[in-house]
Image (cartoon, rainbow, N blue to C red; front, side, top):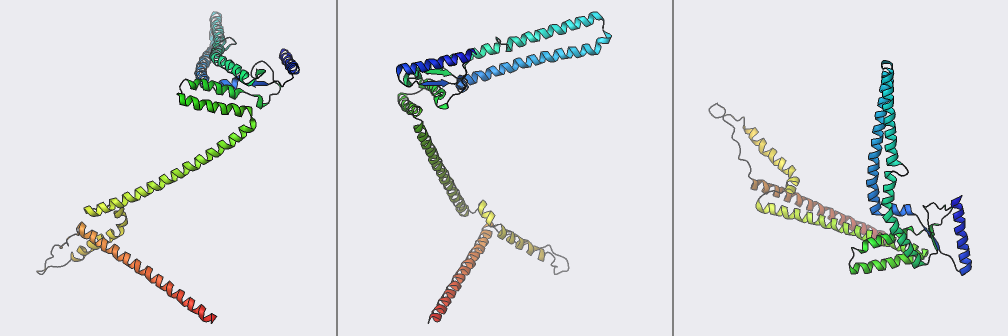
Length: 347
């Protein structure tokens, strides 16, 4: 009831002020919780505080578990204990329960460590927010600025009156200004002027958003083309290096990895032919009736093997070229015959 009365009272003040001055009253609001959640220092400190709170919760749970263990033990052994021992254990359990409740209240109560540390954590940021709100109100002629997350009940709030993002920008600017050079400060001021103009004109904000989207799309297209060019350049470099390595291998009398891959069938055929010949001569009898040891033919040297492969590849290329020429000649003759047939039909 008190909150509603305060809201009606403020609304009456606004109405009277607008009638007295004969001008439009400017009203804005902020969301303090939203601002705090988007300040990096506050988020980091809050995460550390949450770790502390988690540790306190674990301690409370450990105390509860110990109390439950004592209760179960007493329930199991109650029939074997005297009245004095039962009372003694019940007193111990009650003492530990009270100790656990006191610890829980100390850490998580309305005036506990968690609430006090949260308030201490938010206080410096809140002071900065209040200063930023005053600066914005003076610069943009606001008459009233409310806090949406406070005790004041706001039944409806239009998003266009929310200046929380403006306050965040002010906080971030003041933090960045300490680390900027003169040139960077000048650029930052120009950026701030543009942002202020956008805040004042929603249509300009839409245009700026469309421009930013076009710029992002153009930059992505340029980046994709650049990556494509780099991929083609790398492919060309790899191909050139492979050709250079193959030429160097031929020059030095060795076979490169790529040449070995392409020449595997020919090499296998050569090996088969060289191993087949000794097998044929291994059973040849000697002139005096005793078998002689097979005379192994000398194996091919690397130079001879390369020469043989070269001749074989040359022959394959020649046959391929010959076949292409024959196909072209046949196509040419077929075309001439078709043309001659057409001319004869026309005549």
